[in-house]
Length: 187
Image (cartoon, rainbow, N blue to C red; front, side, top):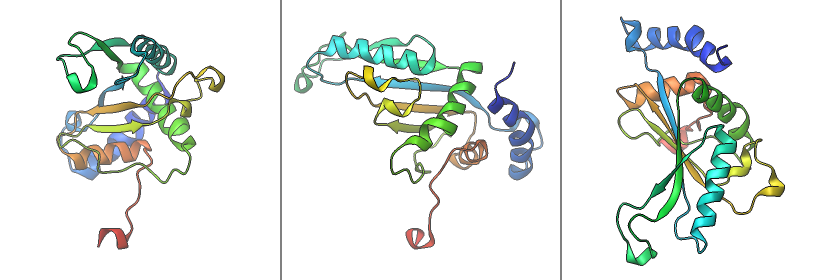
């Protein structure tokens, strides 16, 4: 069974984007290819325990086991050695991706305190969007009593869009709550 957001994309968003962008071929319509969650614990004093906590939190949020990332080179200022574990990441595709995006858009982002919308300027120039989350407790899967440390992570939404404008239109039509610019801020 397809997730609701995927059905909404195929039935509503895809035809609207094709019309709005003036695309002749249905395969030119931008789509979401994958979602990558990356958590780096940095220079925590008990780094191995922090990495283990990050792996547990990401697996609880996504429903998929993350891989542990290691340092590619040594950095003496951060007391970091090559090959040392520094974080975790997980890549979501297909059904897991659509389920996660649905929970992110409809449940997690609106529960952020003093939320006024996410920035529409965080695109990388190739149609990919990266969103930084400072606290994992916005997800309903996380039990607040069991949080040992606050973990922030990045969520990168990789799209097939060629430009930032196409990707913005795609994510906006999917329901991503972007911050609306006022005329005073634009001037």
